[in-house]
Image 1: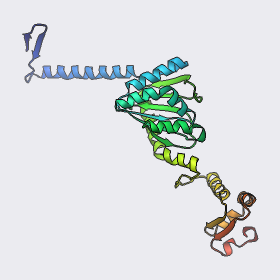
Image 2 (image 1 turned 120 degrees about the vertical axis):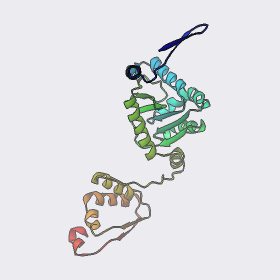
Image 3 (image 1 turned 45 degrees about the horizontal axis):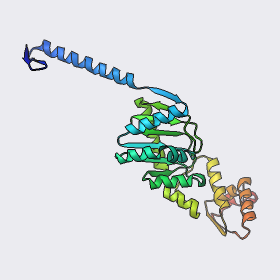
Image 4 (image 1 turned 60 degrees about the vertical axis):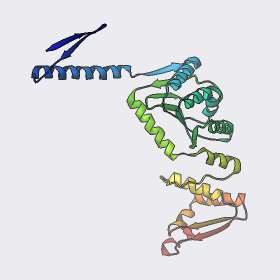
Length: 274
């Protein structure tokens, strides 16, 4: 039964369902139709688009930033800090005044050091990661912006926009993974300015990566080189790669003192291992 109540501007119809199963089925059916329409509308609003040209790219970046509510996560290459400061700092400060939190991940080098310091002074959380390539940002877990073409102190020539949920989720996950691997900007800046290496512990995989790390370790020796290894080390140290690394150390610092700790046995006493 439908009871109508008239007000000044509207007529309100109250439906009394009672225990009538037909009315209940109708309500469930209407609710399912509504849910499907809502889902279809949401999918229709999701899109990915490329904006070409400095004006169009800058406009969409500014608009998305102005609509951000709680956080913006950016992964930028070494050229991008200058663009962040010269073209977007004011918009970032306005967003931060609204309570938006900014996190920026980039490769800090001597060339972009002044811009990175200014980013820190603005109150933005900044971290360093070696060999960052490409540029992207995720806004409020809702919008993804990216560009592959970035030149120092020049406007972005094009940008990819997407609010497709699966794309945004993937990029947010990628950012969090890289962010966890990065080091605080202050540590990298101290390394650049004072020559203090950043402390780190890393597990290396693949023989070429291990060989490269060991030879770089050798090349950094100035006065002493102490090695503690198992019985297999003499055969490894006897390879041409490590011989050349040790020769290079002697060339750079002739006073380096070598000390090897290893197991001496029949397994490693062949002439080629000594």
